[in-house]
Image (cartoon, rainbow, N blue to C red):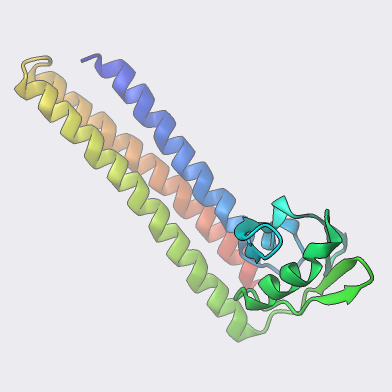
Length: 188
C-alpha cells in the first residue's frame, strides 16, 4: 500500500466533502435573494412523470435584492413548479405573472432566523459526520495494510496521526464557514 497516495486521496475526498457542505449552505436564506435558495427544490412534474430539480426545469434569476424570478423552459410545467415551491418548506409564496413565477423574499423574522441557524447546524453536523466517516475508513484501510504486513507499525502510527490532522483541519474549516454563515443569517 502506498501511504502517500492513500493520504492524498483522503485529502481530496475530504476537500470534496467540505466543498459540498459549504455549497449546501447557499440554500439557507440570509436577508437577500439568491437563486441557490430554490434551485435544489425537488418538483414532481406530471408531464414527465418524475421528480426533477427546479434548475432542470427553469431559469432562476434575482433581478432585485428581495425577488427571485423563475422562468420555466416549458410553460406547461408552470403549475407543477408553483406547487412544488409552495410545498417546499422554504417559506416562499410564488406569484404567477404570465409565463414566469415571482418569488418575493420576505424579511426574515427573528424566529425564522433561529430556524435557519438550526438548519445550518444540522447541515454542519452532517458534514462533520461525512468527514469522520472518511477518517474511519482511511484508518481501517491502514490497519488492514499493517495486518497484511504491507506497512510497518511505525508507518501506521504516522499515517493515523496525519489522518487525524487532516480531519481536524477540515473540521476547523467547516466550523469557520458555519460561523460565517450563521453571522450572515443573524444579521438584520
